[in-house]
View 1 (tube, rainbow, N blue to C red):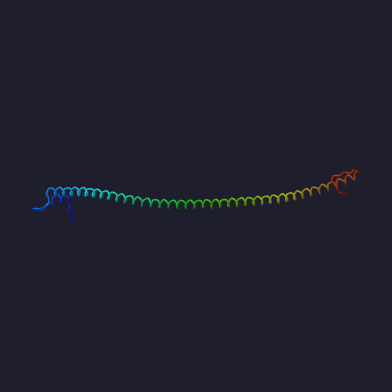
View 2: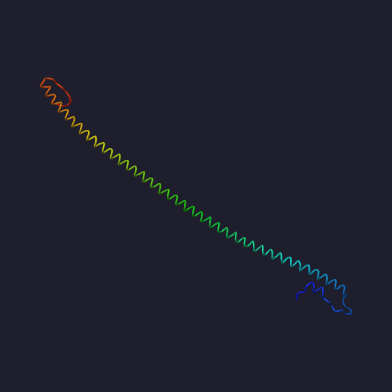
Length: 169
C-alpha cells in the first residue's frame, strides 16, 4: 500500500477519551508528510537524473560503437591502401625490370648488329684489298711486260732501261 503525503495530511483518527493530543499528532503527521514529500521530490529528481545519465550512457555507447566501427573501417582502408601501394610498387618494379631487360636486349642486339656490320666491313675491306691487289698485280704484270718490250726495243737500239726491278730480261 503506497501512502502519499496528501494521505498522511488528510488522515483523521478517531477520538478517544484517553488518546493522543490531536495537535501533536497533526504536527507529527505534517512533519512526516513534509519529509515524505521532500523525499519523493528528491526521488523524482534522481530518477530524472538517472534517465538523463542513462540517455548519456546510451549516447556514449553509440558513440563508442561508431568510433569502434570508424577505427575498424580506417584500419581496413589503411590495410587496403597499404596492399594497393605494395601491389603498385611491385608493378612498378616489374615494369622497370621488364624495361631494363628490354633495353639490355636492345643494347645486345645493337652490339650484335655493330659486330656484324664491323665483320661485314672487314670482309668487304679484305675483298676490296684483294681486288686492288689483283688489279695492281695485273697492272704490275702489264708494266713488267711493257718493260720487257721496252728493253727489247732498247737492246735493239743499244740502250738499257730499267722499269721494273727484279724483272729479268
